[in-house]
Image (cartoon, rainbow, N blue to C red):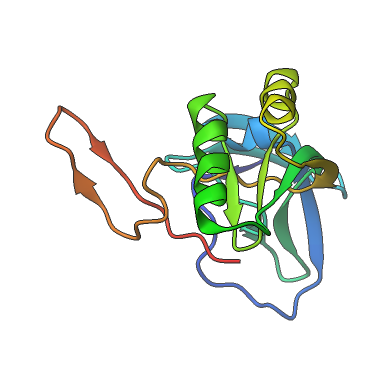
Length: 161
């Protein structure tokens, strides 16, 4: 079994890819185990959660890449005026659901409570099966790190599509 502490920062992109399939909930954990599609076993002890597409191991024959399993999520189109998009964001955020914000849509977990709230507010949505990569921190779109002065800091990740 290979022990992984962080994704690789350099590797040969010409090597064939072997998928290390994992669900979003497991990816969020610090300690976990999984086998790649070829049966190679990995143990993960990470400080920062891994992400879809991270290369976690490479041999002279292949590179092992995290491939997050697609899941059923709600797609909320943002083909509306900015004030309406803000209301949609507020409605989802007020329910404390994780979201993946993209320029033309929001993705959110498929949850009966969220469906009910969206229906009540007449907000259009539909089901899609995709890799869901919600923003990890409240200020992840701000693009910088800072402390709010109340005993802990909020890290801000950079996420590009």
